[in-house]
Length: 95
Image 1 (tube, helix red, strand yellow):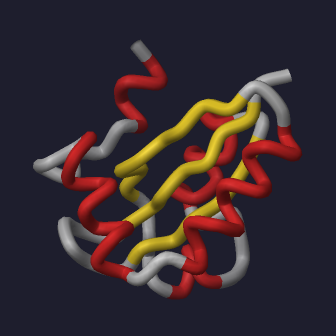
Image 2 (cartoon, helix red, strand yellow):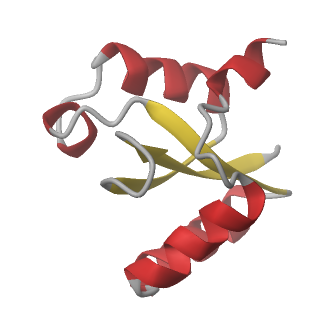
Image 3 (cartoon, rainbow, N blue to C red):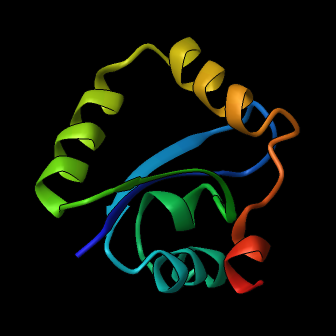
């Protein structure tokens, strides 16, 4: 089963949250609607700005842990390389 590492943000170059899931569309929707208590709800992180697909959950979890230890500048560069405008990728999930 595929798994995804994803970044949520409130705005371009704003607060970033890194998560992992096997249900990307549903999980992004939960963040967008504030259904998940915690960090993303508190900081209103509703914009899906980065996604990586991995073949297994253990690989995705390891990547998530690695990314969480990166300096913020590296995370911003990663987002900017794939999504320079920090567009909300959630709409692409629906297409």
